[in-house]
Structures are given as C-alpha cells and as structure tokens.
Length: 146
Ligand code: ZN
Image (cartoon, rainbow, N blue to C red):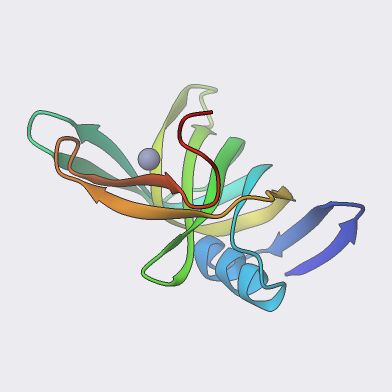
C-alpha cells in the first residue's frame, strides 16, 4: 500500500494480495484518522458480501472467490469499540459483465485498488441500535437539533 495526501484528501493504492480492510485500518491508524468518506475502483477477490434482513436482524453472507472488477467501493470510517471501523458497500463486475454487490465484510486485492479518502471534521462512533440490530452512526460533536 502507498498513499499520499493532496490538500484535505488522501489517495491510496492498495496492492495485489493485500487485505483491503487491514490496509485501510493501518492507513487510518498511521494517519490518526477517525472519520471520513471513501470511494474506490480496482479489482478484488475473496470477497465476502452480505445482505441484511431487517426482520431477522441477520446477514446472509456469501463468498465470491474469483477475481472481480471493483466497479464501485463506497463507504465511511467511524470509531467502533475505540478503533477505526470501515463500513463499505460495493458493486462488483464478473467476466460475463453482470454486476453483483452488497455490504462488504472482507476482501483481498486481486489486481490493484485505488481509493480516495476524505477525512471529515466530525466525530462519529458506532453504537448499537436494538430496533435495527446493527451498530449505527452516532454524531458525537454536533448538536442533534440542527
Ligand atoms: Zn452495510
């Protein structure tokens, strides 16, 4: 992985066979980043995707071992249990040009992964929400009435 800062944003290149989440987490820790937005393209493999069933409060999980075009990577960084936590959704493309996607649990880089990261000037942390069954964003330093 290599990255550089351009003004208030970062550009990150994650290399073949690197773990996507571990790379992003080590980037966030090295730069002491707590919150932000990211987007990216490239190619991934060993992707575990999820679809959340609200009524059962569980994810269907499915592994996609093969290489896939990373058509869209979109997500955010917040703090969960005191550590950087990336919440990422993705759209992937297969060799027949069909698309599939979902909540991204894990992935490795198949070719390269090119990510833009924009830090946010607010603090967000994940807190459990029993109605939804997930850890949702809580904005720590803004007035909830605005
Ligand atoms: Zn999600």
